Each structure stands twice: as structure tokens, then as C-alpha cells.
Length: 119
Image 1 (cartoon, rainbow, N blue to C red):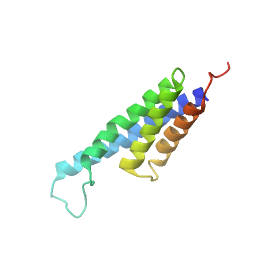
Image 2: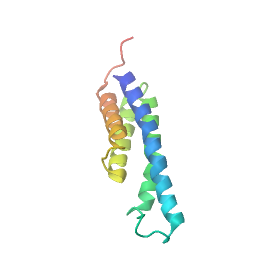
Image 3: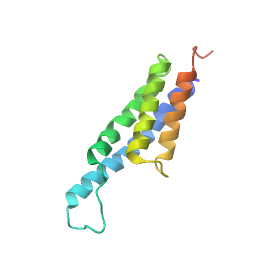
Image 4: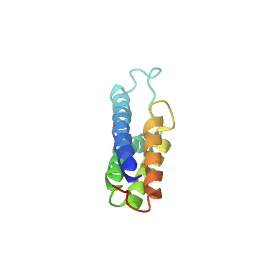
């Protein structure tokens, strides 16, 4: 289970990095465009939250996945925190469902791994 948590956390974090990159880029692009196209682009409600989660949620997922073999409970908590952050900031949609689900499942598997995997 720890190996599965490791893979799910890292893959979920990488996909979350892609979502975060585009979310952060969108907020920057709308700021850059300003009022030139008010009917075309709208800024997100909480820019600071989106930018913060865009950076730190994928980092928590990758760190939690990498940690899940040695410290499964800490790694699982980090992955669950990452999934909760992405769900809160980005919502559940077509581009966010996989990183949220992977980080959440990886977190649950890491927390459920009470003893080391047998080799």
C-alpha cells in the first residue's frame, strides 16, 4: 500500500502542477489584460488563494508521496491536505478530478498502511 501511495501522490502532484501552472497563469493573464476585454475574461474570486494553492498543493502531494514509504502517516496527511486544497481552490471539474482523486486515494492508502509492505 505504501508503494501505491507513493505512485499516486507523485503522479497526482505532477498533474496538479499542470493544473496549478495554468490556474496561476490565467490569473496573471487576466491581470495583464486589465480592462481591455471585460466581457471576455473575468478574474477569479480569490486570486491569492488560487495562486497559493497552485504552488503549494502539488508540492504537498509530491512530498507526501515521496514520504509515504518511510513515514506513511505524515505522507498520507500531506496528500489529503493537498487534495483538500485543490478541491477548495479549484473545485471538482474535468481537469481537477484526477489529481484530487489520486492525492485523496494515495493519502487514504498511506494512512491505512500500518505496517511496512512485504517485499
